[in-house]
Length: 506
Image 1: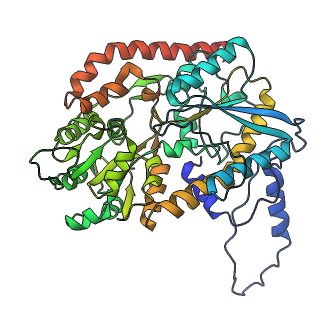
Image 2 (image 1 turned 45 degrees about the horizontal axis):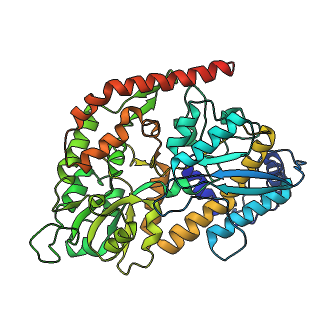
Image 3 (image 1 turned 60 degrees about the vertical axis):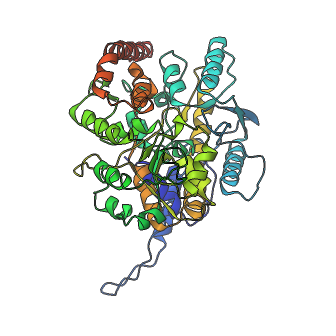
């Protein structure tokens, strides 16, 4: 099974242009490669071979080559949560502008549109998880079939999946979930009882924007004679203990008023949602799909209690850690403060990174730390409020057409959109060093999709953030207080999936 990193690297390595559209099948591509190989000159036995590295094979969506949808509209509902006031729409692009991501969207839409004789029409709902959820609910109940495909946040897709409003993607014709343009980790972790109602992949970049990260100020690392974080990551020593030790050394009363306030220099600026990342960075999830295919509550264990307790003990010290949303929710101010060298670390999302483009001092990007060195990976969370997942409303009129168009959009996304986002924009224009690119590979390869957060089981997503918001350190008692409600919600959620499986004849 290929993961998200494989898809990214494949896109980066592609040197040759696409020779055919998305409707050409993988079998055709393999046949072409075999023909080319057969025509090559054989090396004389005993002679030294001088071979050039083989270029990666350009794969195609395995859909009927004669697909023609008569110029019909293919409507994609786009709805999301966003601090910046705009819907995350990975399909809107009216013309070529010279901006890499816009042009990749335009070219993908045009290629798929020409090959399938279909018009890609994005429809933006109002910002907010409830907007898309409400529109899909109404559309399914009315049977209108207004939306062929949809992209909504995890809170919305989870709620819709338990109400029989979404199609099981695994049953939609022509969508090959094992193809490298689909996120294999998402496909695995978002299934309940072998049913997958939402996922992500190269069809969208919004999942990348919603990925947690830690940014650091290189100048402050030097000024305080601190260890190089990149070397810590490479040596499997980028741990919570080292993070806390470094951040604890940094504070300055910048305005000289003798008080801790928002104008000071801090060791870290902590975003509320970071608390969910602290849980997941231990390798623990709020909820995990068990061997029986059902969702299980796995939040409470010795490691999680230790990790959250240790992090909170540090995070509620106002002289070194700034829980900045207590004084200002404005991301413009956040960017200004980090750019002005007034915090060593910043815990936020990948979507904030391009906003640091004008920063004079150098910065770097890191995955979330490990709790213990012995962990096998650095685990980084996909934000629940910020997440955007692909789903298919149960009102979608022609699932054959939906599957063909969707698979082609995802396929073309691998060879254009992902490269434009990752290589040309995030790495090429925004980051300042080669190490950041390596860190992004680690981040994207080890992302955590936690359905406990998406389904808001027991309200633990808000409860764990409230520990930071209220400067408390009572994780164990917080967990026990909500456990009964959590188990009831979990039972209700699992029963909904059992019912869906029964109705599908499973």
